[in-house]
Image (cartoon, rainbow, N blue to C red; front, side):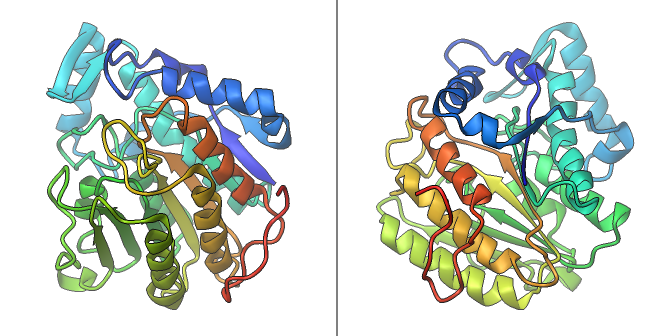
Length: 326
């Protein structure tokens, strides 16, 4: 069963009418999923908010208080790209709580995998600094929750957003229990993600960066993704996989873009589920929305990703076969 986490509070995070990360991203997606009937195939639930202790597992208390105070004032900026409005702090708590709600459901056997239709996104949020539209690092909080609450030893974060998740990398750069994989456009915002960035100390080798040029084709991207998933990620023997699911790798994304078409996100999902079908992971996957700013294409990309999550026959490691719903 595939769980979808969503709450109307995510629409109230007001970034302004002309900001690319705005409420229309979710409105368009909701309308599309309901029109196609896909919404009825999912188990839709409201998330709980993350607790302050859970947020503080990866963010400093001074930073958390700063976000809260700016939100209480009604408006402000964490950086030139990252506005905060009256409802932003509450929305960010629920965005961080969504993957935690999903994790509990999966670990209790109530779902196989989940997609968190949330905003604000999170993978640029550093321990003490919000940036790149991100307030709290949703996937990092989720990974830390798996380490502390469920005592897992091998958690993978797969980041296929067009931008490098600098915040996620920084948080786990010395952590051998979390393998961070990012495929991203390079050179590009935020300027991190060189292939030489592989972790330090005990975390050496547990960060994998794959920089890609802006003209990378769909075929090349998928081939590269498949190779690293079936190689280093599979060898890590993940017990749980978290996806930073950015859809700004879509070929016509207005602020980013690589060479992917909507149907490619189903292919990526099926490849990932093939690795997640190992006895250790037991198909346990939580996906969190990050980027994706083409209002017409984002719902199509998310639809394909969800079809991949719903598929009863994940793509085998030899590359053959399809899930249901073709």
